[in-house]
Each structure stands twice: as C-alpha cells, then as structure tokens.
Amino acid sequence: MMPLIVASIGEENTIRKVGGNTETKKHLTNLGFVVGGNVTVLSSIAGNLIVNVKESRIALNREMAGKIMV
Image (cartoon, rainbow, N blue to C red; front, side, top):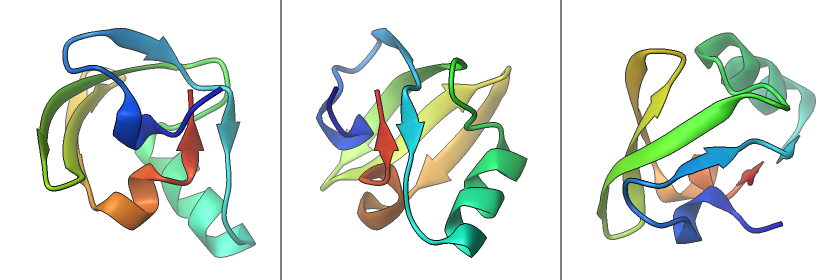
C-alpha cells in the first residue's frame, strides 16, 4: 500500500484506504474516492495531481492525495 502521490502516471490503481478526519473522508467519498474503486493518475506537478476517477477528472493537492492509499 502506498499514497496516491507516488503512483505512476497512466497506471490504474485500486483504492485501498481513504484517510483523514471525518470531514475529509466524506469529501473524498463524495468525489468518488471509495475503497475498491479505481483511480488513474493523469498528471503530476509538484505533488499536485490530476486523476481520473469514475469517468471524471479531478484535481487534488498534495495533502489530499497523501490521504488516499492505493
């Protein structure tokens, strides 16, 4: 298991854990980051990511991406 920020660009990964406080977990879940779901990193600039999750492109800052374990 590793944080999403170290995942390879273009490689599909399965979400294994979503961390953070209750509010953060709820926010990430509402965006589509659920355990067992797939996420693909499309771009990474200084740890900030653009990812594809559930047919949507979402931008995540380094802090939020670090809370998603794949």
